[in-house]
Length: 165
Image (cartoon, rainbow, N blue to C red; front, side):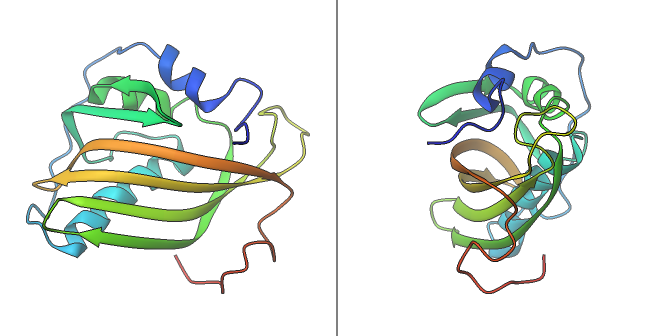
């Protein structure tokens, strides 16, 4: 698997202390519908790109793993980790697979990194990201991430037709 930045996303998340007590975001949608589950997962994807976890629909005891490693537990820890993400330009070509019976959702997306090393002037990169979520009552209780980084922009490399976000 590729590296997100010189520091690495796993290190950022694992070393981020749970500081402060952000108020839990209340979901507008709390049923097990496809729409509600996608809204929860999208709130996290938006948090990655904007470096703002204040609107992410985390359950208080949410936990996250990445490439099989524990990278954070508790909403305060994961909200704080989003502040330290490498600079992202956007995400695109997102696909959702939803199983409302098991409260599971997987998305596949391309994230455009402003610079691969996390330093100004570094080369751009594309992150091929797949994340599995468990969503209960509109809140994210589990996140499992796997990704691969590719040098360069996502223009013309995915093989997927472009879809609007």
